[in-house]
Length: 234
Length: 234
DNA sequence: GTTGCTTGTTGTCGAAGTGACAACTATCGT
DNA sequence: ACGATAGTTGTCACTTCGACAACAAGCAAC
Image 1 (cartoon, rainbow over the protein chains, first blue to last red):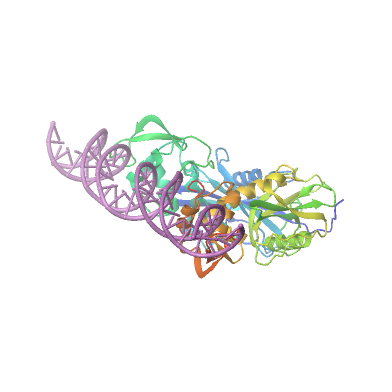
Image 2: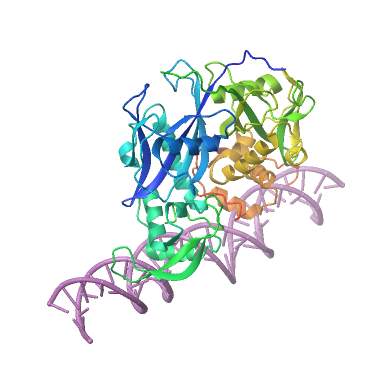
């Protein structure tokens, strides 16, 4: 039997979608079109549907509000935020935050409740979000910085084929400090469960310079790699 | 404003409480007294109250169902389980699972919905839990094994003052394999942000043997330590 | 073409950390 | 006193890391 006098909740999902833009870590935010916080920046998200998996709801809301292609998106649960006063409205709204990474930092198109949707550098957006989304963003930032240490997640910021210099750029953007190219090369080449060479080579970023070897990631975004790429050690 | 036609959810918390018993990793489970799954083992947990913080709900349910003292308990959110079919009952029940560690592996006392409450070795209980609690336990086990690598969480399995041999016993119980005493000593003594010596020394476990130096943990359970104690490296 | 610049890749070397294992120390039981 | 037990320190070969130098391969300007 079931006591129906238990409190009821509304359940939402929020998505922190990261990408690399101009060598910086950028996050996708929307301008809210409805109260509360109308006109403020917020993370894309919305209510979970009847019979819908949490992660599916996250992907759906992302597509609806920003037009971002949900396919080939590394998406994972971050944590749940449920402080009783986190939503001004007279209902308890608990949100399951998700972390996502994409290689397509294409222009988003606002939809449904969102008045606008844009990529912004994380440093600019921190401290200005609606609800408790600043806290969510801070958690997400720490998580992604940590995840690229011991998973292949960094490759999800890039197209299927990429050079080690591009991959190094991802680590630099996420961690916010430069990495020695030589040591990075040596370390990543020694991780057989992360990268495989395609044999091809391609012109470097600026057009000038020696061509770079092209690699592919072996596994899935959140698969663990054998020897971690430690922040302190780079 | 607020569309009340959004689906409503019931929200529960579940707690995976670990302790060390007889050199093994043990988990606290209850025998369910009500349907569904009456008579089956399950993780302690229950419905979140009106206006109640998630982590407070977890602590309350733990005390209610098992009589375990919630004070001085390392308690942290694990992740949220919300598959549409995870509860047989005709309502959507989403559960926020929590991870906890205690030094008091005292005898629990069953309460409220629980018919019994006991400590069981994790290896015995795996595969026999109600709902999706096996999955939750597996996540918790992996999380605690990972957390003791780079936080002080291992000390939460022990009284405030302990020897390095006791601490080594915790790592061995959680990881399930023996660790070289000498190397463990060298590694942990070199971590100044983890342990501080009390100067005292105490008779070893079996009564026989050289007295061991007594240490105290410096920080809080989930604080990061400077140099991680890697599983692979032990 | 040659020179110089830029970028990718490989090499070198000292410092530090690791795993295996031996040696030493302090207590207890007999 | 003696051996058994458990905590602690030492040794050593091996690996990894960070800093930095050196080399390779393209482009642009002259």
